[in-house]
Image (cartoon, rainbow, N blue to C red; front, side, top):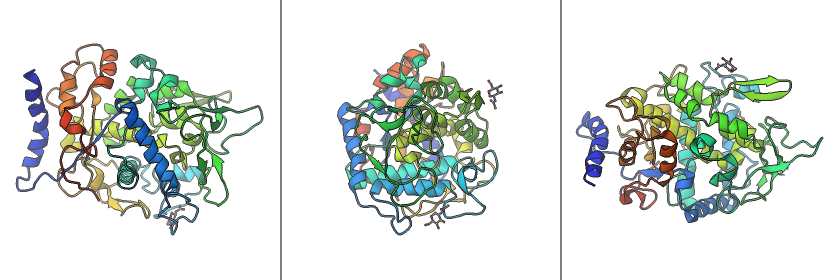
Length: 435
Ligand SMILES: *[C@@H]1O[C@H](CO)[C@@H](O)[C@H](O)[C@H]1NC(C)=O
Ligand SMILES: *[C@@H]1O[C@H](CO)[C@@H](O)[C@H](O)[C@H]1NC(C)=O
């Protein structure tokens, strides 16, 4: 009973000591959005979130001047992602097709948003922007929920097919219909893999009409359904504790980004086989269908939960050595590299999105994750350095971290932060501060 307040104070110390490096500056975040794992929302909250997404599908688009193809507010984001995946505004080299979109794998190209250092910062920014639009225009009043894939693996006592994420009533619906022989689903990357491939058959998005893609195609009249093609083994393999732990052990940003993004895939006799790595692939390969399309995966609203989960891993990694990692952008990318957000939001330098609670007051992000990296470690990581985000939730959870990891993963779903945090728009404080 008495332990909790003490732990809370201890856990806030790193924040205070950082703030103390510039004593005159006030703490910039007035409101911190609290992002929770999907199953930590109540069923009513999940339904409300889905409603907000559906609201986006009925609202008028705002980016027609850039992307004539968009038909609703949600598609503003789809067009932006397809465009940015092909190099965005800043085409510095030929980015035709898939090779172009991924042309930077391991290299230093900073156009495009996959296979380059921009991958993590761009997606952090777009998730924030989407979260802001859900709140400002579609009535959502909490932080953007995330998907912790590990919870849906047998090792954590979960199951892909029973994931609350795919629930037809309070989730995003499940697999796509199984394709008949000779029938092709999505004509693009991701076709032919997995157990479905056809239109999603249940849940709130089964009648969703897509207009952008497949691939980088931005031509009118390509209306089609939302497809999925579950590849459960790929999803579970990429979402395993080992894969995330490996990523968290990365010594620098470049290594982390590669660990996140690069699935180790081989093709044997026409069959795709995965050998760990790249949990970016849980969503894209595991959910499959539209999610397997590097340009238009964002057509599936699950995209945002998946990428918020990825952002959380980057954050957990940053938190392990915050002072240093808050400015580590790897090679080929600097804190000044602009991030292209189309008509959706102003370009921002990478440096503006490095710190999710904007300690130096130069950025704009103000959010945190309800749970940290406890579930991935048997003991609290590195003495003196908190493993997870600097929150009281983290400290409360580490007190039980000597028990088995499976139990920890389960207790995660029931752990709740102190009451004050859950108020308002997922906020801790009163006022609003965002771009
Ligand atoms: C992305 O959109 C911008 C603005 O419309 C455009 O100038 C640019 O050429 C587009 N990039 C690609 C790769 O299509
Ligand atoms: C990919 O997986 C194969 C098969 O397990 C392994 O031999 C290889 O070292 C892995 N490559 C990387 C980069 O992890």
